[in-house]
Length: 428
Image 1 (cartoon, rainbow, N blue to C red):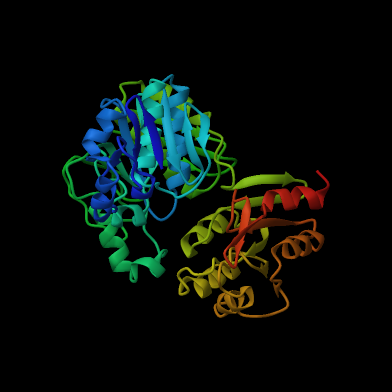
Image 2 (image 1 turned 90 degrees about the horizontal axis):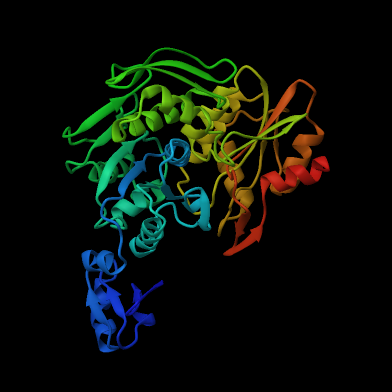
């Protein structure tokens, strides 16, 4: 990509280079340095690039990593800071935002470093004091966060995902551990360490069930979230319209981070957090009559957390699994969905280069097939069938894609939105 500055432009792509431009050398493009120099580019490192882009060194960067919860936790931190009157940037799965306004559409969970620096440049220009970002395991392994200094590093959880890339859960945990190897301030969910090894320096902890620095002395999940939260700064009364134990973890992480990095009274932080209404595509109610919920859950743990939060209802679940990704999680997703749902409709997700029917067959390897299970490869038809067959006492939960607006098939991204399909079927 190119970022224009007074003296020309900065790029990390040697193919874009021309005489007088700046080529920023990173861990991933260093082998193209000679090619860039041959075109007349000035070679700079990331520290020089940040100075050239005039990025404010005082912006406090908050990084969140973990299998699940990154997007909601990041959004909750940013929303709480904005509600307290701070200026804040945010980047992750949903795209990039400055002070609540989108500046770039969603792409990678964690972008290449130069794109992230472009977001930090925009945040600097708009006077942001904080910048919140999701940090993926791929980004850690591929050094996409090199040169960034974090004011807080947060660990949410680690469960099975991305084994197509990392190979084993142990390697996945090892890569995550790299993020926490330095002396940066840390906030760790000690209910779910997931094999992660943490440098204990500057570490604070949060939990629901283990003794931690931030933990509820009591809580209720009836009609939302209500918790009496013990903190190193005193007691906090935390309330929210969000649902589920997993969202309580996300909120505790968010308010713990804000309480640690700011000097604001706990009651102010609690009020600011209570205004956070959640993230599009995460436990999003797209219809109340009938009740239809869309969620991004696409791992065994993610599916279990969503369906467990709704376990007192009669659930009809529509879900699939992504192609060209970890195949071992597919039957586990099927088994967990059947554990909680009254009926299952197994369908296609983003099949990518695989055949949807093959993916569905692997999911069904973990399911006890009976009359309460139906396989429909066409996702729109699966949603249509689920809606038309929905009994008055059932709720429909559509899992896997959340707020995605496409379906990837054989290398092509076709327009597709679970939410829009549902609105079309309901005539809304």
